[in-house]
Length: 403
Ligand code: 13P
Ligand code: SF4
Image (cartoon, rainbow, N blue to C red; front, side):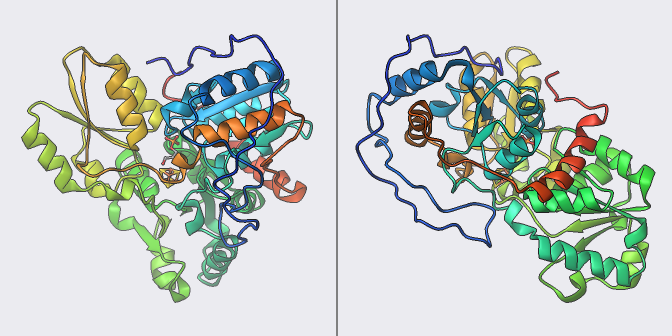
């Protein structure tokens, strides 16, 4: 599978008109307590419109080099076909930073990814998220006020000065800014080990949020930190539900957050697939629970999962534990290999799936008409510190698994 689809905008540029039909009005306000917004002003073309593909092509062609479309691997096929580049969150952050000439960056992914793109691009560029309701439930599990409270708890235990805050990319811009301000850093699933090594050169402990599973899997399985040196800080319990002694003894302080999609894979599913498919290899994302990763053969980011299947010999069998759009695409792209979904139950990421063709067409046609819609803007103060944390990550010797 190539991760960079063939450009589809071969249709000559013609005037683009906006959809007259209205549907999917999602509300008119944004929720300050949610990482995702709820506002989607304007009219959307209906999902059943057979001309949507053609309209997306036409709008893309009309915008030409002014537009760059980024697509995360969990996006629907109907959307991913219009991406100029596809990737995991690390690769997409780098790609956004490397496009200073693009006036509009349309981000087919979720809100925290579009925020990161805005932080890494110039003020002349607009980052657009076709549906503001495309948030991330994991990112919502760590709020700035909770993280500030946790830092106070660490200070009271006398360990804040020796702790480096590390946030997963899947977090809001203000959390990234907190890390930037406190000597911390951002990581993604493809560089968590490198980032943690960097952090442990600067402090004795790491406060890792929002995904306890990525933190635990990386610390224990890739860095050899004993499981008992990892404790879980629960933002919903007084003092995080841990004692000052536990905080002083711990090496990894893991935030009690998780991905609602990857959290559904179970160790039993691994046993089951091994019984059903002899010689199957189990390949999972590090957001899966530790017990699942322990039973898997390989673990890595979406980019790693794709390159592993790509390099695998014909006839090999794979059970993949990650979002279903990607697994289905891999199964279609490699008919000579047996690629199956690890769980029996459907496991789409509901918020990634919010970006559909009607929303993409709506965004592109508005841009082609000179109207910027759904722009994601991070305020200057937050941006300054969040960029520091992101830049620390980008400056590390790191790569996307497909490089
Ligand atoms: P990647 O960093 O592998 O792209 O994953 C992002 C994500 O949201 C996984 O759930
Ligand atoms: Fe968030 Fe999980 Fe969806 Fe990724 S798959 S965007 S972590 S909810």
